[in-house]
Image (cartoon, rainbow, N blue to C red; front, top):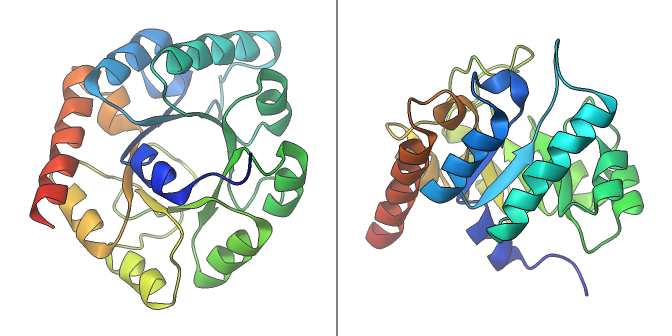
Length: 223
C-alpha cells in the first residue's frame, strides 16, 4: 500500500468529529455511537486537558471507540498520542504545532497511515506538507469554547488565502463550526467541517451530525 488516497480522504473529512471525555456530560461511547448513526465520516480521539483519562483507562476507552469506528468503517485518528496510535494500529495521528514534529511522527507511523497537522500560518502549512501531512487542520475559523489554548481567529478568508498560495492538499476547518456558518467555510475552499461541541454538547449528537451531513450534501449539490 502507498499513501492515503486524497479523494478518499476528502470524502472522509466531510464531517470530522473530534472529542474526548471532557467534551461531553454523557459517557463518550454513547455520544460517538449517536454521532456515527447521524452520519459522521471521520473521528479523532482527543483526550487532553485537566481531568482527562490517562494510562490504561485512556487506552481502554480508545480501544472501545476504535472498535465502534471500525464497525462503521469510519477512520479513527488519535490526537498527539503517537505511541497509543501505534499500539492500537489506529488509522492515523493528528498533531498540533506544540506536539511532536510531523516529520518524526510520519517516520514512526509509516506512509500508509493518515497524518493530520494543525496549521495556523502559510509557513506551518508548507512545513507540514513537506513533512508528509495528508491533510491540514485549519483554524480557529470562528470563536470557540472547546479549546482553551485556541489561537487567534482566522475567518473563512484564510482558507481562500491558502488555496491562492497553492495549498492543494485536503483542508478541514475547525473552530466554532456550526450548521449556520458551515457554508462559508466550504465556499472558501475547505474540504471538510471539523467539530467538537457542535456534536458533543448538542441535545442530540445524532441530529447534530445529520444536520452537518445535510449541509454538506446541499453544498455539493449546488456547486
